[in-house]
Length: 347
Image (cartoon, rainbow, N blue to C red; front, side):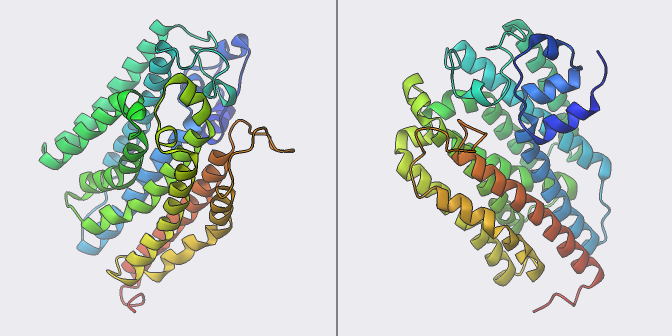
């Protein structure tokens, strides 16, 4: 076994499909963890943390404060590992409950170590415990760093509850999607901001909404894609309970709201400079994601579509990547303008 840096990079950017156990066994531990936890998806956690870090850096610089890189790195890594821990638990729970048995949606687009016999349940539990301990240590660090602030304790507790209860029962109750929006939007972004600055800002809460909406659009789209399978398995996701048509409209509305909230923060409280309108450069991907939602999911893969059974989620994911990139770019420029040209952006 050797360290496969190329696989680290690949697994962090795209979902890996693998059927050969010998190939799996030859991978290093980090590669296995990145693949098993679907790190191409969990990278959204890193995006949320970067967004929070930029907002914190901007406000700290304006107030004469100093950005704490060590705390930022520890919290970001901890949350990234926590997301991966949730995915390990998600696979274990669904496998144990029989949801992932057979040719289920989940096993068609990525590696599922339990279903494919790449490891057994005991190994899965060990990986969950190790990952969970590492994530918890980062959370404990944040608690000490903020002197066990009630805000930090509350956010830590909420995150832990969602991590443990998302797969069951939240996803079965049809509120898993709401939890996704809250965690990867206002909760995580505001929480990391609070740990770095020690202050609470409601504009930051609102600034966390667009990326949260972007993430949940992927989640709802994925659940629409597999709603038939979920219905048969008794998994009551939002699209199963509300119906595909309603879920498609909610996804479209979420995509539109992303840009409306950013425009509001630019023109009303002026929390952002007009440079934030850079995010509108993702309009093609946004319109494509919105447009494809006007029709029901096709019964089979369209010609030339290589990502089946993923359909709606593919368009939502593509938009998330483009929007997320422009959002971070815009936030960096916004920060630099406020720090080095404090009067230039006034309008």
